Amino acid sequence: MDIQSQTIHEDKIRLNFDPKEKTEVLLKALPNERAFDILVRRYGLSEDKKPETLESVGKRYGITRERVRQIENHAIKALQKSEKYQEVADALEELAELIKQHGGIVPERDLIETLDYPDSVKQHILFLLHVGEPFRKHKETREFSSHWYLDETQAKAVRDALRKLTRELSEQVALPEEEILEKYAKHLAGLEKDIKDERALVRWLILSKQLSRNPLGEWGLANSPAVKVKGIRDFAYLALRRHGSPMHFREVAQAIEELFGKKANPATTHNELIKDPRFVLVGRGLYALAEWGYTTGPVKEVIKNILKKEGPLTKQEIIERVKRERYVKDNTIGVNLQDSNTFERLPDGRYTLKSELADKDTEK
Image: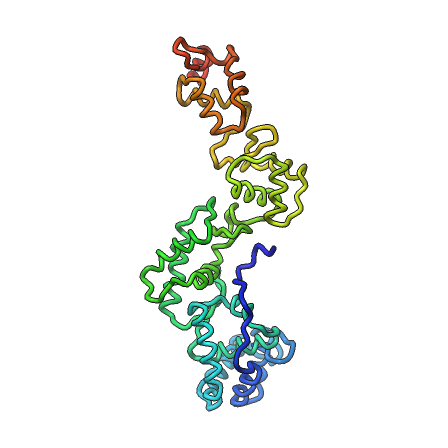
């Protein structure tokens, strides 16, 4: 499973025109051979060639990167003003409709993955987007992945809502997709466009490099331990979160294999659980998440801490409170309460800490 993948899996799309044929029509309008060659190199339009950088093209011609950029921009403007541009208007209209069908804003990676063409042909489609006047591209930044859109107001609203959503999330939280979509939709409340299309909302979430999904399909901050998965410890954390209650380390190992298809040796899993403070031993081989409020240590220490905080309690009250923090039998708790050096039974039947012990704790 590619846990980093942020694309939406759907049926591949074939366009009603030949992308290479359309770019060939456009390129015939270029004023000179150098402009032609620079566009072909910059956009990887020759067979099996990848796009070249400004620096690479500049070295080939003995000119600066900025000069290459100027020639490229001038050439594209010349194409937009040419008669040939009108000959590819139908293709540009179809591409615009495709972006609309994807919610009006679509990550470039997601768009490319959707197209049923070899990479060499996809470069021609990207070139048409760069030349087409209706299309706008937001280049990749620290916040967002590169994406294409048609309406500047809508795109800005989508990005602003993503920023608000990111600020709202806690590092320790991962939310089911339905819940994070609901939160995101609230931040988009002022957007006129219909935002009921969940697939469009997911595509917009994918724009943010600050958000990501874990292998369970839950969303959160990309660097959150609830989302970022590196090894067995992280898979164990997700397995326990999914289960919702303490598990034996062998069950954890089995859950890792069943949920994520990762081979997890029980002994190795146990060692990882021992070393990570996110996990608490709450019984023989049983582990819980520390964030659930469970405490570590012997049962006797758990009882002591409870009595320090709450004062005298009945045996049943102690049992109830201990079992919120540890997975133990009632008899085990009862046996520990019989330690007369630590606990004292009051005339009314409640238990408290031994007087001398309580005094020492007070002095501390």
